[in-house]
Length: 553
Image (tube, rainbow, N blue to C red):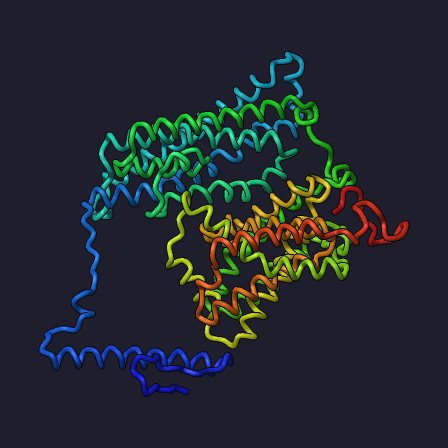
């Protein structure tokens, strides 16, 4: 129903219901009212003798003044770092795992004990082998691209490479970046017990590296001294600015020095790992590792399967139908992988997924946590703005994605209740359950939170969603019941859906003072959990199936 007021200063009110028909009717009425307003204004200006309406006079048409070379340099600078990292992983990942973890698995690494060389020398030799393999393959890729560009010049019309000076400066920035990536691969190969585990580590490792590298694609991100110190992100943005011709000598020196120090730190860590006899001679078999409660490779495999299913099957399904695709993603991918992982591992599902009833106090604190998590996301989003400013259009697109044309009850069910249950089963249940005997509560929460942020794909959401994941993981560690993070997760999503469906995305953000206060409430709620829960390792009754294993939380 539309009510037109007698006073022209008062707005016309469109009354609707939250049911599907009411929402659709409201949108159609609002579109008609906007067209009527535009036609009315145009008619009035025409009556006054104006040839065009004011909207036409103030219309802004952006015109890109960049030359073909500048446009090509910016496009290359945005894509080259991500492509470079992908090629490094493609050509160097299995070389690193075969040279260190594979040789350890074959038993040939033991021969180094006869000469007893320093472990740092062993790692340095293998690192140099890996570094030259990566550099050689990248040189071949570069020659192949240059040859293609020379032969098929007509196919690259509209694309121009930057000048030689810009390319040389970008290559100078790329060298310490390649060194950092090679050191990371060498450290990872020294850490994993065998080649199979290295395969499980590969996808999470590449995702963790590509996330900061994708910052270079964002045109509104500028290189600052703080960003120059960030691993991966700093040199990637510096390469982009070098190709465009906007990188200063001081900033280039800062990026090169910082990246070199980071690579040296990783190599030092790898040498320390090779100094351990268990790492040099090979780790314990999987059965013995499981007997000690070490299931972290299974956690990484579960995350790799989740990421693959989410990005390929889930994204395709949601592109066809937002509601049906979300239901498929949550039930088929998230919950399905969690249950399959528990069955595949052979561990009791109740113990792995923490399927325990919470105490009344912990359930109430879970409600309080869910109502205050919005402040944590808002505060982290504000803190990341100097390094990673979020365009306002991102929030508008997110609001449109979370509020398709459907009744509010359906939206809450699909975008709040189902994610609260299924995503918690996958991350706080399966992944955190596998990590329970390998990491302490805080380190475990940080690891699960990082994976939780990475799987949400959108770059501006990685830190904010990761921070929420850390608190949800800590709530499970404190309460020892998966129901508590489920309650908090569902309430947080539901609150966001209700605010966005009411057409108030700004209200979902809140003020800084309220965000800080809500963050304090969320942290206090997590800290207060577990008071009525038996301490980890205390069985509910001797020999019961639900008794907690050593190190459980």
